[in-house]
Length: 369
Image (cartoon, rainbow, N blue to C red; front, top):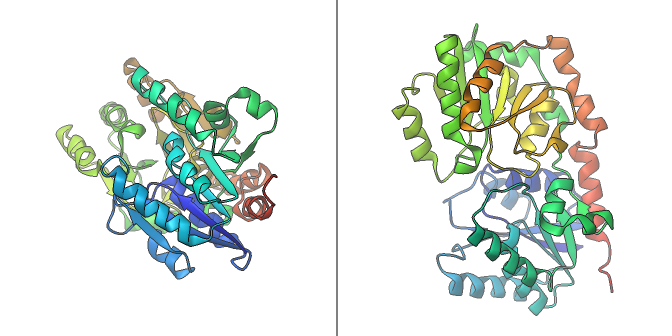
């Protein structure tokens, strides 16, 4: 059995947490065992209980920036005592901390994973990231990314061209997200969404997702038509301020905050993602599997558009009207056509069953000498 320690910010509703949960659910646990290091942002993340029920140990540490000494001490204790074959970090350039510790305690394979592309940062942040990557490169044995753009962003074009980066696809259970007309009708009736144009964003409640732009756009939409509802699905550390922003903009009666995902997509008509930056967001694979039309920021990699239901638009201040016009001119797919899209996702290699088998094989291979 290969023992793998995963490091990520939390096991709440974020894309990385969901991805690891879905991957591990499909793996053979007599061959691969996952434990997790996460940070104390939430009392109890959504995936903590189900992962514990699958036998995973979950270690919750203080965030490195708030208490680096205690964080490093606990991390060292976990790795020294854990007898891990692999440490796999999903913390971006901050993964250099655990990579160094894993090397210190002779963990044979040390995996660093890029989930972000096109992140806009200050010169100071770019310099700090460059410095941390210089350190990390001394300790990493395996380079990973969610897609080509994210791979180039962290590891460089040459590493990608030389096939040095393993792509772990942001795969989903396509059957779970397959469009279901019966569920659509039931949900729209239950939630009083009949005869509504239902817009939705699924994303962490954080500045990355660009909620001010989204709400400005939605305010323009409801000026043009009064039959719309916006569902905001997710949690996050900026939840209070984002809810207050919606209220301050007079949107509290038409913006609904929820936490469900899979079934609710059936009730929706158009997905919106005006992110400032992304890697290859899992949710855009889910929405395409559902056949849901998506309007997406042009800061998001076009690599994820594996079907024809995704359109990219700019997110400059003067683009609010463009987004609003596009939303208001929405033309629905037929129900039968929408049902067919999960097959397109499978054919593109984003089905969790085949993807998890590839990842299992990756973990099982022996370290390079």
